[in-house]
Image (tube, rainbow, N blue to C red):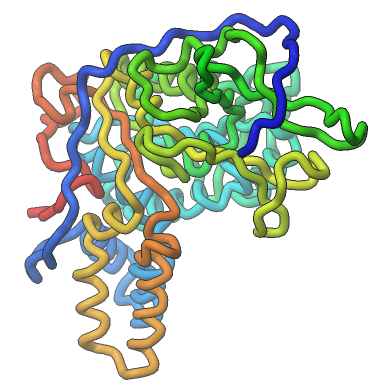
Length: 413
């Protein structure tokens, strides 16, 4: 992004919360070798329960399960965390910005397929969605028609219903309105659409990037630099080495809220998004019709996004919870056992099927395609990784310190 000029600035709102210092960093391990053939991976565990519940499945269904629907792996991830932390008697599934409800629907289908595992667990779904239009689409996707929706526009819980699998579901405009309790939080392509402040390093110090009217064309916009410091500068690290940074105070507030909840009542958060670990500079971009679009041309016609700075999210969480990642989707799926599943399928397929399998695998794992499209980042209670006192009740079995699915090489025994 080129900055064309410097102009005066008007009053700005005060900055939100100060950045917390970094003193803990989660570790993750890439699967650098093919896992042993006798490993029981999370997906294999899922398929075993599915076959036990509904009977044998076709090869076509098996291929679809293991290679074309990574979304279902997220459902398995939440169940594996629920099991690893003691099988609590109840949990909430909370999705931030659920889009059309497709991802939550996939996860709920996994929950239904593993009903024998979750049969004694009281599950509820909570969607944080500010768009009335999208909430109606989500309701069509997720809820059972024979149970009418309860609407109360003036309430913090503005809509309630029952999912197609019989699970209670509620809608909220703000995360703070979601009941506190043992919960699993999902944010998939949520943080990258939150507004960012952009800063450029100058000889006079950091200067925020603003949008102004182009004096050469009154119907056009341009980027400009503020003439002096602005309140949002507080979010820039003192030891920052980049010359251009983007900070998202709103993301920090949300991560702090998630961290406080997880530290208090247990559970975990899984964040999947475009992003980096504090290395990129100018990532603000627009997309229109799946093509790059100038962010200042025809505002309102393109989707605006900025890569998530996971190093900033980590700083916002530290002191309250542990974090893992970010890791690339390629690594996450590899750690979930996708290579083992591919090898088994290839050994039993004819040539046309082999080509289809390899094409599907390439789409998911190729760094130039989806392999580096998303990064995964998790928030968990400190005791999940380091042991110690767990939040438990009489209906909760003793937790184990098994590896966190996707963030390390797993071997379920």
